[in-house]
Image (cartoon, rainbow, N blue to C red; front, side, top):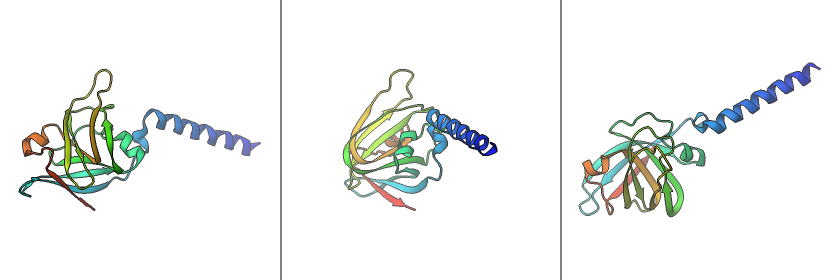
Length: 157
């Protein structure tokens, strides 16, 4: 009898955990790797800016993205790593602050830069082509002159 009671209690705890995770998947995300990401001018090779980025290289980390983050400092970002180059669309799900969304091809070439605002209504899709997507504080791209055709160098730690 006690084994059944313990089993039932364990099952209830497991179900409660699944329910909490379903409503807030950020609770399941831990242990981000980091990468130093440098933007360089596509013509001159001159360094434009560097950020330290958390790496979102799995489906759950990519789904959560920066939605579990209150703010980014000037030298911080998130780097989304996908398996291949494709047309992608990013949204500002549960975001608290504006960002730049920088789409990057497999060879490191910036293809698209968007300035994105948190949503109060239906989600706006920010589209671009890339294997990588770099999210940084809004205005970072403009301040540092990062445009399509420039290059992104990634040093994974």
